[in-house]
Length: 198
Image 1 (cartoon, rainbow, N blue to C red):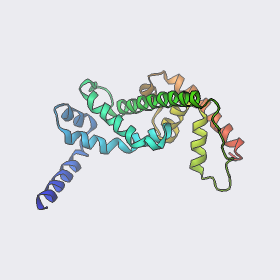
Image 2: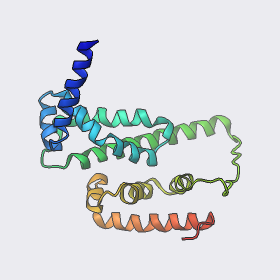
Image 3: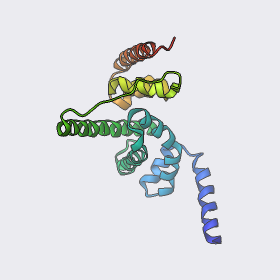
Image 4: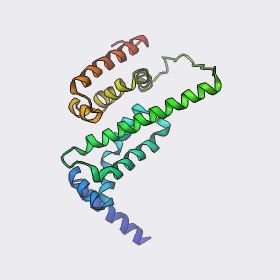
C-alpha cells in the first residue's frame, strides 16, 4: 500500500514538472521512449480533442475515438516533424478519426436502409419550451455538411485560428474563410427557423 502511494506521488511530481515543458520537449522525450512524457501530452490535450470529436461524431463512441486519436499519435510520433506545432498535428489526427468515423457511420446507415427498405423514421417534433441551447446547437451542427461543421467547430467553438485550421484540414486559408462564412449563414438560418431571434 505504501509503495503504491509513493509511486503515485512520484508520478504526480514528475507529471507536474512535465507540464512546464513545451510540447516539443515532451515529443522529443516520447520519441526516445519516455511514456511519462506522452502521458503528459495526453493530459494536456485530451479535453480539447474530446471537445472537437464531440461536435463531429456520435457522442456514444467518444471515449473510443479519443483513444484512437492518441493511439495514432503515439504510433506516428517518430514521423512527426519537429518544426510543426504538435497541437496542429494532433487536431489533424482528430479530424481524420472523425472523418473515418463519419464514413463508417454512412456505410452502416446505407446497409441498414438496404436491409429494412423502408424503416420507419418517426421523429418527434422538438418541444422548444424544454429544448436546451446546447441541444439546439448540436442539431444545427448535424444539419451542416461535414466540411462546414468541421470549420465551425474548430473556429467558433474551439477558438482555433484560421491559419491553424488551414494546416489541420490541409486547405487554403481562403477556403477556411469561405466555408466559415457559409457555415455561419446556414447555422443562422437553422436557428431562425427554430424561432431563435439573433
